[in-house]
Image 1 (cartoon, helix red, strand yellow):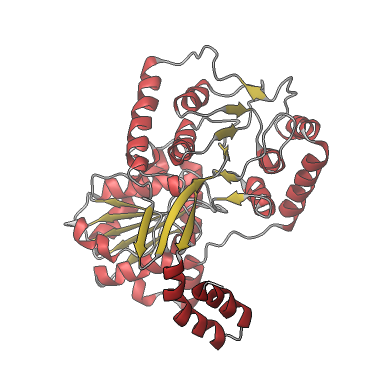
Image 2 (tube, rainbow, N blue to C red):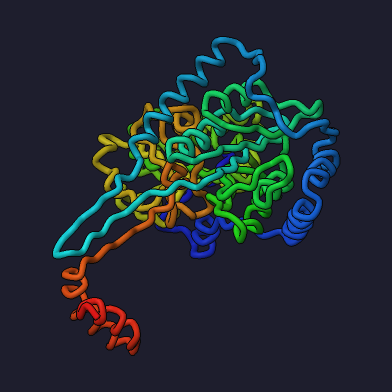
Length: 425
């Protein structure tokens, strides 16, 4: 059996802590390398970006920018798939826009405005693979939020090219400028600005450990979304879903990375055994079997639960990036969810649907951050700014109680600043 199986109630404190603690280990060598890259890009700009691209991506770039208005050689079926995902993602994120408000009472008016960041920088992994879905998931919410300029950085391949699918997705998502730059040097360039690459007010998007380290460093200069850890999934099940479905969902996350975390919480011992057997078969047949096997051996676990209540209690403590609720009448249990990046309800809702366009975002908090943060959305690119306004009558109405509170805190000038307006002097 490739994956560990044990009753949840019998977990030792040490094993429970190890399963729950997914904080990325900070590698001092990676952090130091990222710091050097950020400092060098800040000092030398485009020249440093080109130099690091030659060193890490093994390609000499004549230019950093990719034309978005050129001819794109992309099969029609690929275009249609990207367009369909774009429509679903855009529709979902438009519904999430916050409504401003203004309220007035007794001479005091209060309200809130939503101010978008001016420039959003998006990092899209690449080099050996194409991720048009990440372009759509990040750029569309930024556009919906009203961001003035959206830029994308993505690594080039060994010939200095960016995949046609990424270029097409960028065009369809309303990206303004696309750059063939990856790694920590891309994060640095977007954070400090170079002659070619604009400085971003916020940087979002997943990447490797060097990208993560660079984002942590530049967070002092601009906003970021998350410091991402390996992908993770928790499935809560009651034995009613086909074991093959659940096994493939676990394997789908495991095939990303040997460090991916996969957890099945089930009230059915028979289901637990069946899913474990399916995972053994998948690991013997799928193209990325070595990665899947490494992930499941290191971090995979099937936990037998005495009840769904126990399962949800553990899931909320775990705060997974992806949470599948594969139980009878799953909507009834949605209200029990307190911490999760994104939730997938019912046996037919594959976690991968969230990756490729059901609508909700696939840029999600990992490593327990779902206990404190939600999925990337249009809100990520907005600053909610409150305002207040008082007439003389409103100042008089506020001054008595507000002045008293200022006195309690020993701030006499605070109190007097209100009283002089109330008095009209």
